[in-house]
Image (cartoon, rainbow, N blue to C red):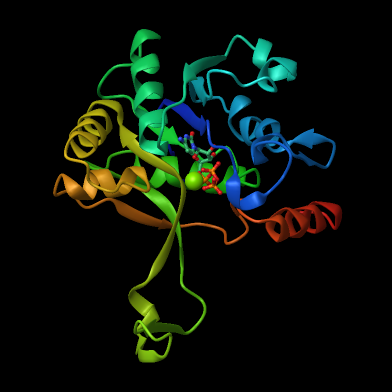
Length: 236
Ligand code: CTP
Ligand code: MG
């Protein structure tokens, strides 16, 4: 029998976006899915995990929805100020983690507020696979469809070899000190940063991809929420 010791970790949930592509009456993390908001489902993926040290949620300063949630009063959940871009929200969250006593060598798992269907098995897989990794990494899913590269006229230039193409999901798991340095330097250099891994890559390091479940979906457009609602209705 192999014994597996999972590392301790902190969770950081950037939730300061407005959800413009969702075109709803409120930011998408506050839309309802199976009787609770998306953000509550997302937090629940982490809150009962025995290795969790605490959770920071980055929120818009004038967010009127957060105080109405039960989890806003949970002592394990701490609020940070969101920023202009996702990377700003994450960097503020890392600062808050430091104030809570997190050390530079601690693992931080950054997970989209709008990704409520993270399986415990995927979370544990990420922690187990990266426990001793010098860089860290992220959940990802291999591309399934045939991929095309287009020219400016919208016509196919070529078919891309999909064996080498992955979709980057979250959580993305890095050590606090390395991630803070990567994000701060990338933001200062005005490099386009769409996820934590891209900041680490920009520092010249190579995050590891851990193959996760394809149903760890991010709600981006209205049809994504309808799809998740169907998935939850039929039983996950
Ligand atoms: N996010 C954030 N701070 C920002 C922008 C985004 O904390 N300034 C968060 C979102 O709340 C979301 C996650 O980053 O949980 C992923 O971003 P995305 O899916 O792009 O969400 P939005 O930016 O809210 O949506 P859109 O791009 O459609 O406006
Ligand atoms: Mg966005």
